[in-house]
Amino acid sequence: MTVDGWFTAALVVGLVSSAICVIAALLKKGPNDVTLLAVAAVEVFLLCYLVASIVRTATGTAIAGAPWEFWAYLITAISLPVAGFYWAILERSFWSNYVLAAVGVTVVVMMARMAQIWYGVAAPGPGAALGTALGTALGTALGTGRGQ
Amino acid sequence: MSTNQPAVARTQDTKATGPGRLLIAVYGIFALAATARAGFQIISKFSEAPVAYLLSAVAAVVYIAATISLARKGPFWYKAAAVAVCIELLGVLIVGALSIFDVRAFPQDTVWSQFGRGYGFVPLLLPILGLIWLYRHRKPMEQP
Image 1 (tube, rainbow over the protein chains, first blue to last red):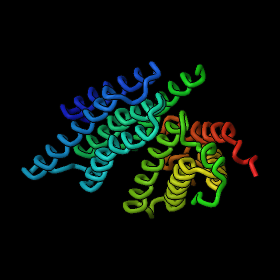
Image 2 (cartoon, rainbow over the protein chains, first blue to last red):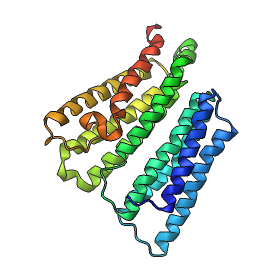
Image 3 (cartoon, rainbow over the protein chains, first blue to last red):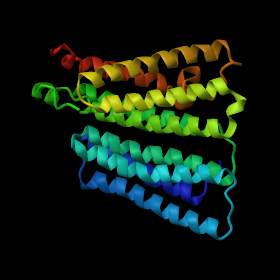
Image 4 (cartoon, helix red, strand yellow):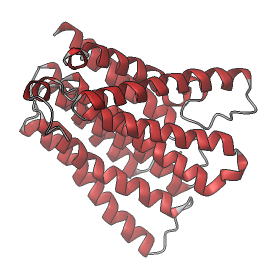
């Protein structure tokens, strides 16, 4: 896939956000201003990407893949931090920070798929990356939970 | 829904706590991913492999059912979650085995093909973790 500035930015913002949330969870802290702002940063990035994508398509750049698939991915990605935020603050235990950590990683995987659609790479899907990322997150989470 | 149930059960039987919240979140992500994938396959290329894409749809429904029933309280939703997670485990084992022995019938397009290898084997891991989680929260079942 083509790695552009948007994907690089998503990679940095998403992974840093997830890292902050995992560290907070490892320190047995519940969702707080730091982790919620880390997730908010992902949302702000996605909203910037949405505006930029609308501007780019409006000014003549064509999406190589199926446009409706691209927009569906983008709208779903934008709703993820909101869903994660909602699910996390319902119970403010340190486990909820792992939930918040899942947001950044998942958004990175979805951004990878969006880049594929944008630049037109027929790919089997984001499955492999998504699975590996989630597996790692879950493995870390359960490894910590056992000691508690 | 739980108005006619004893107050004790209502406070003790939640599965959506601690690690359960992360489990439900990951189930939710898979429900979303499987639904999106099945929808895309059925809309854009259903005639290529109807059986595999129908299985994708079944998988999506199972993930949605598991997510909702794990998040809900009460003995009914406990049973529903157990059924959904068991179907999920059977699905990943059967489709996983068939996809290895009978490659033509099952292209690598479903979530469960090759025991979920395309998704980092998380589809195989998830029902096992789900059953462990349900087993550790089996108490409400024993209450009358």
